[in-house]
Image 1: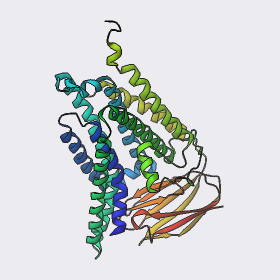
Image 2: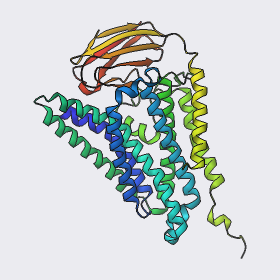
Image 3: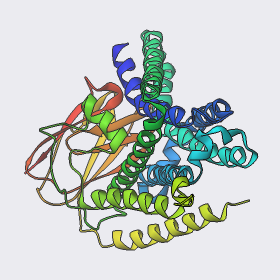
Image 4: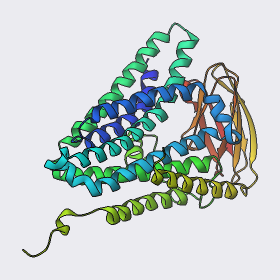
Amino acid sequence: MLAALIIVFREVFEAGLIIGIVLAVTRTVPGRNQWIGGGVVAGVLAACVVAVFAGAISHLFAGMGQEVFNAAILCIAVVMLTWHNVWMARHGSELAGELRAAGQAVVEGKKSLLALAVVVGVAVLREGSEVVLFLYGVLAASEDSSWSVALGGFLGLALGAAVCLLTYFGLLRIPARALFTTTTVLIALLAAGMAAQAAAFLERANWLTALDNVVWDSGWLLSDSSFAGRALHVLIGYTDQPTAMQLLVYVAILLITFVLMRLVGTPVKAAQPART
Amino acid sequence: MLDPRIFSKTVLLATVVCALTAAGAQAQTATEIQLSYKDKKFDPAEISAPANTPIVIKLKNLDAKAMEFESKTLHVEKVVAGNTDATINVRAQKPGRYEFFDEYNEKVARGALVVK
């Protein structure tokens, strides 16, 4: 039972963190619960579909289907997260202020919610398909231990939900003014980390061979398979043996986000006439 | 209907992916190793490969259940559905012993790759 708990928890932990952050980011947006909930449900359904077709997906692209598939859905999440940050740079002040009920902001808010719902769905899908395969395998074997394993899996899932709530309420403790900056930075790092992870998948698939030398090995300091290492892996994309390409992609996404936010963003205060 | 912005990004991504495929074609020749998995056991339980060359592990999962091939030290993780086979690319390694296991049966289903 404990083994099942650990396996399931390890998978849902990442999704839990991401959902917690997204919930904190969208705290002021009306109707966010339906969108985020929809993202979770769609993610679970998609995870079941992916689990059923795991063998077929794996055989695509000369046996590298799984890697390419993972890289592709991570890229979708990166685009959505970056788009959200850029959008918030423009509309964040409207949403945070009294204007949040104003028609345009709400309509635009829905678009941003859709982007974040996709991010949530993708996170659940990625982690969920492995959980589904694992639990299905156990239940299909119908050994005596099946129910205890299923119970362990369920507890692991509950723990993942606890991580989500802890992240959410932890972030809400940050004062509203600082929270916006915090979540912007968190989302940018999340996107950069996911992009680097996508690069790692493409490297494993041998699709990406340029700059594939390992730049450093910090496994002795913090292994990315340890608990803290995994948490940092999700949050800031920490990996103990990054390749030059992964670092390049990571920095590139941060730069792109920063530049786009600068270009698109309309700082409200600066727009006011300087003299009265 | 497609959001033009997302669409243009998709096109960009597709272009990048195509360019990368072309780059991938030049990968150096790798050592290929056959490995099978049945009843929570890897066969052979120990495989070896020369150092500093990429390694390709061809894994046959002979069980009806899915398994997840994982190695922390080799940085690989791959789900292999029941009764299917999978290809696992491992980048060139320094000499040493690298353990791998089935994540779904971590305690019993273990093996190692010895790089010489």
